[in-house]
Amino acid sequence: MNSVLLEARDLHKTYRLGRVDVPVLRGCSLQARRGEFLAVLGSSGSGKSTLLHVMGGLDRPDAGGGAGGGEVLHDGRALSTLSSRALDRYRARTVGFVFQFYHLLPELSVLENAMLPGLVPGGLGKAAARARAATLLDQFGLGHRLGHRPRELSGGERQRTAIARAMVNDPEVLLADEPTGNLDEHTGEDILGLLSEAHAGGLTIVMVTHDQRIADRADRAVRLVDGRLDTA
Ligand code: ADP
Ligand code: MG
Image (cartoon, rainbow, N blue to C red; front, side):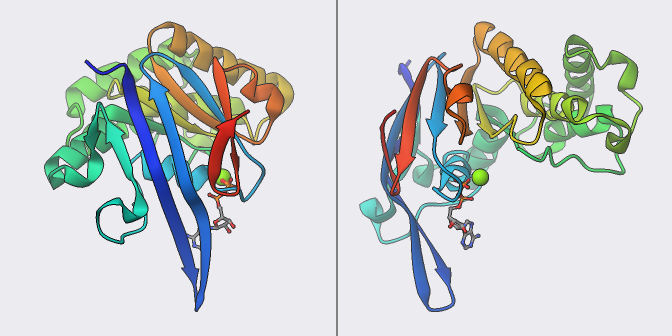
């Protein structure tokens, strides 16, 4: 098994706004080793979310024939070479996503939200996902909230629900997009504590943030500047 779990290799990503090309990632390379808690620091608009989406297989690097847009590699295998079924599995089982604004579905209960990734192609399946979601929510102090709607929860509780959702398929790596960015300091601490515990339990984490103090909580930090990554 490769000690590098997830690698971004010379990624390029350009958005086209009308006739204007906006290059966001311009040769971005990164290796996340198995078991590490890695932070990517960058100011607002530097391309952190874009990088995370490309690494998670939610978006693609620029086309341009082979090496043009770079590659994301999982365990040494380029995502661009995966069959659509293997890519579904990668999205469902290899990575789990945590978003700044939670992205919970308002009409679903806490338990239903958390079990959702279990139902997508490649996921654990309904029964296993329900059981796993209930266990995680209980572990995260939300055992008494399973039937509640997201609007009945505090920000911290919503983010804990979203983290349970991200972990429900037992992913190898959590991709966390400013997971404390919308929370007060105390609640943000709570969430960082929860991520640290998951990391201590063996989960690899790649977290992006604009906040140096939050990046300091990781094992290692890199900085996204001008579409490239440097040691922070
Ligand atoms: P960050 O997460 O670091 O704030 P983003 O990755 O969200 O940065 O965005 C980087 C840049 O790309 C910004 O200038 C943003 O406006 C632009 N951008 C992001 N998504 C899109 C999109 N879908 N279409 C056009 N421009 C985008
Ligand atoms: Mg962002």
